[in-house]
Length: 316
Image (tube, rainbow, N blue to C red):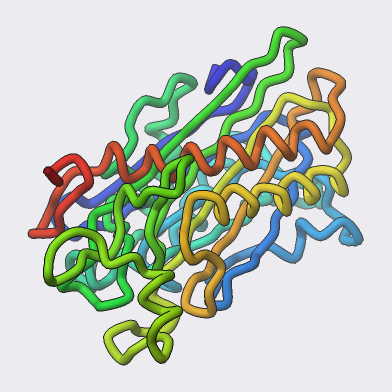
C-alpha cells in the first residue's frame, strides 16, 4: 500500500536524456477529489470537475507531468489505461475516467522537443507500485529546477519528493510534490537548501534580491515555473472537504518556497480522500500542509546533478 493507504498506486515514466517525465497517482474506487490552483501561470486539465458545485464526486487518478502544455497529452495515456480496466464515471454508454492533470515547464532543462505524451502516461500506469521509492530525478521531477530569478546560469536541480505520516488512530496522509519554482527551497528554519546562486558565491536569496531591486528581470521567462502537489488521505471526507485540504496544501508550498505563488509559477495542489477512517478536515489539512513542505524539501535533497545543473547534495 502506498504509504499505507489501501488502493493508492504511484508510477513514473521519464526520459533521462530529454529530461522530462510524468507521474501518475492511481486512486481506489470512491475516492473524493479536490484541487486548488494559486499560481499565475497554470497548465491544467479537468480541474473544473473538482469544484464542489460540479457534478462528478469521484476521481480515478491524478497526473503530474513536465513538457508544459504539451505534457497534458500524457493524461490521454492514463485515460486509456483506466478505460481498459473498466474504471471511470459511468455515463451509460461508457465509463469515462476522471483524471485531473497539471504540468510544469521543463523545456529549458533538457531537450525542448522531448515531452510527455500518451505513451509515456500509459507507461507510468504500467509502472505503478504500492511502495514507491524513487525521489529526486524521477517522473514529473526529471527536468525540474529551482532558483531561476537570474536564469539558467544560477539555477539548481530539483525534482520530485514525497512525505507521509500515520497516526495511532489510523489516520494516514501522504504528499507528493514536483518542484519547478522561481523561488528558493527553504528548510524549517528558513535557511535556503537549494535556489538561485550568487555569482560571487553562496545563495542569492531570491526574496531579498527582489525586495531590494526592481522585480523580475528579463532573464526569467513568464510561465516557465510551477510546483505541483498531491495530498492523499484515508480519511472520510466530502468533496467540499477534499477541496479544503487542497487549499490548505498551499500553506505547505508557502512554507518551503520563497517566494511562492508568483505570476510566473503555476502552483497547484490536488487532494483525494479514500474514505476509510473518521477525521476532521482541519486536522488533515494541517498534516497535509506539513507534508507538502516536507515533500518539497525532499525533492531537492534527493535531486542529482544533470546537464551541468548542480544539485543541493553537490554543494560544500
